[in-house]
Image (cartoon, rainbow, N blue to C red; front, top):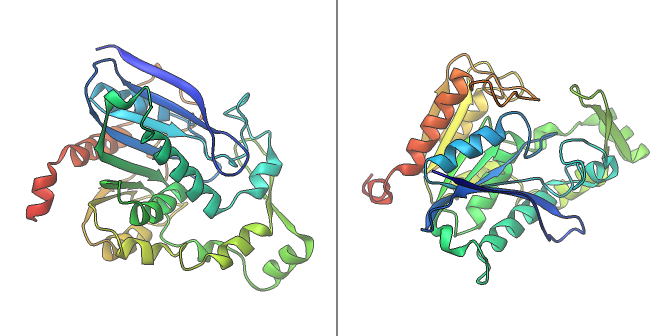
Length: 292
């Protein structure tokens, strides 16, 4: 089966920076279930083995879309490097929600040249880590999403902000820096990030969104995740009305992947397990869900 790959399509969003998007799907012209993948914090669409993930889903009959959030710090000319650190500093959760909405709306454009390949009644959101939190909120808001999968998802945004003296110093200076352990870059967070969260806190409360879900939710988490504790998946399982849990024994936050990933290497067993479980979840009949 031949696959069609369209890389680095620029979708226009609401925030004056393009949303760089990849599509992978089989050339057979028939409506296919759609997967939209959201990367995590300090992530990007071409990280690690996300390309191999997209290819595997496409080979199994999925129309797969992955994208870079517009303010993730990469640029159209360098989509895997954090060269626009001012954009990184200006990012916030509502911008990421807007970007995801722009991607969904773009898929539904009536004059889309991809329309004949899309089953727009069958759209699954997959989000990794912070992207998982974003996906939960959007899935609760957007009625066109039919299934949700979260990989190593955060269950709360508020607890990830500093408090006390650290918060006061951030407000006073207007910027705080974190180190990208992979590149050793000092990446900024402007204080607007916190202000934006507080101004939109109800919308950005993941527990509220998870409880409001009306669709099946597969919660994937590694038992040895040191970035997002396994307990966060337990909270999501408790809150989501229609949850399934896929626990990956011995897996870390990225299921034994790393960046860069040699595409000639086979995928780690733990990540293969994740992809198999996710594929089975997506393939489940909607009628089966309704009967439960």
